[in-house]
Image (cartoon, rainbow, N blue to C red; front, top):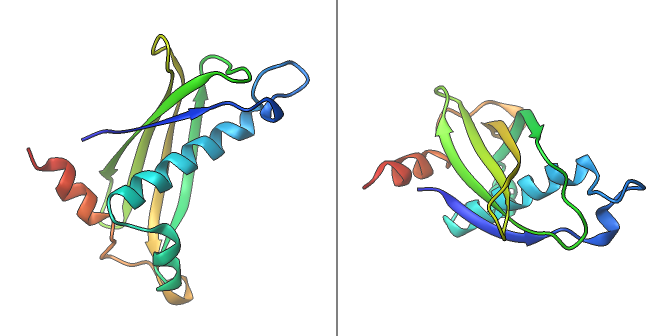
Length: 134
């Protein structure tokens, strides 16, 4: 199961060159991940209030083409388990009108509890089982 979320580049996100500044792509990817989690009944903020935190371990973004103001695009989100404690969100950003791949990202996360202790039983596990169900 791959999740898809539509967005639009805003003019204030553009730099002097007239393209969306690279830092905003990370925000786009993060927002799409949080919407994906919430639609799968995992509220990022609610988990934090329970002292269950999904912490980013590593982010890699490959920029292929530039977005401009008012470009409409969508981001796909897919999650995989990398190890007993680590999960990877694989994401891609495509233009809405012609599906051109503009950027892709891998975000590796771990789940930590109180006192920053790694948790072996992550709420993300429910997403892994859901995505493997036909």
